[in-house]
Image 1 (cartoon, rainbow, N blue to C red):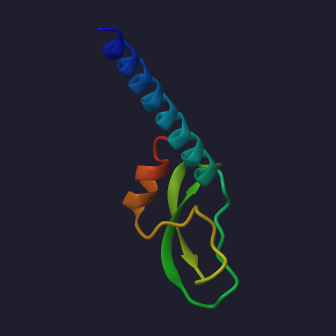
Image 2 (cartoon, rainbow, N blue to C red):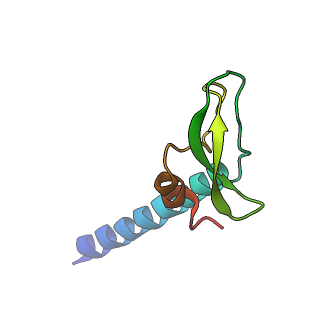
Length: 84
């Protein structure tokens, strides 16, 4: 019985810790600026605009991106849509 209780408590602590880490990552990515990059390509990308509180489309030059650079609107929403 004691083993089960300890295992349950450890499992709950792990779940809480993982959720906190995911939230911290999401907030860090979503607060980064939209970076067009230094190259001359024109890829349609999506990023989270923290000042507007939503995912927006922008043109990415092909190099020099940060993590706030998603290939689809759905990817941006899944990562940042609930961050703010």
